[in-house]
Image 1 (spheres, rainbow, N blue to C red):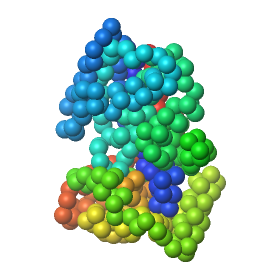
Image 2 (tube, helix red, strand yellow):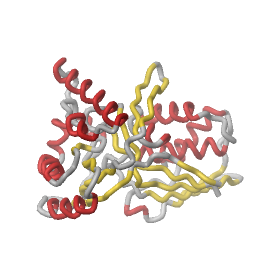
Image 3 (cartoon, rainbow, N blue to C red):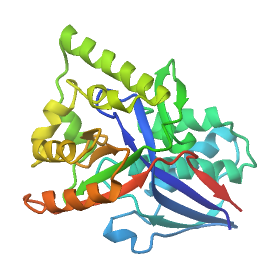
Image 4 (cartoon, helix red, strand yellow):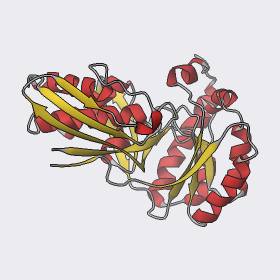
Length: 298
């Protein structure tokens, strides 16, 4: 039975709104089996998340969409999902399902799709490439959609880099997080973000961890979204005070990501103590950069 392992991702990385992302070591797993007819989806306990077990299931819908591209008829399927990536927390849970489904479709179609084909289908489903790219190829990516085609560069972050995900116990839908954003921004704010997102790519490429805090600065989304996240400023302040290179929203939030290069365990302990004082419960989870992206085996 084919098995697919798909990492979570942190998108935007401060200044890189809808364009920059990084894969991290928290995974969903998908197993599937082709059968003569019908659909059977086993979602297990999945940490209490609601996951549809019929044709509304995102993995199934992604398989179906990708097979349409290949011309291969939709077979009967048995699918088993183990979802460890929390939903509506800004860690790319939907992208992981989309990517996993498309890879399953490619296995079913005997490799009819190239990596670029799969990325384009995933970006069409998701609407932007910042989560799906690192989920597919691993490491850090910067990408754009041009005339329906995803163009991107892959960056290998320094091996010493580690991330700490600070995950609150309340959800925040992407729709709600986008609704608070302005429809227009000033030239000053646009230049501010362009300069810092370019700095982020350069800093990761050259291992200039001393530039990360500046590169994470943002005026396009975090100043608006932080109002939806009780404790945002406190978490950033405590993370930086306790040794983080910088701290920002992960995707649309509410999870926050602190970037580290040393004293990992001490940082986790200190942040566990710090977030105890907040209104909501926060999980403090150390994660590695996932350098290989999604993997599969037969």
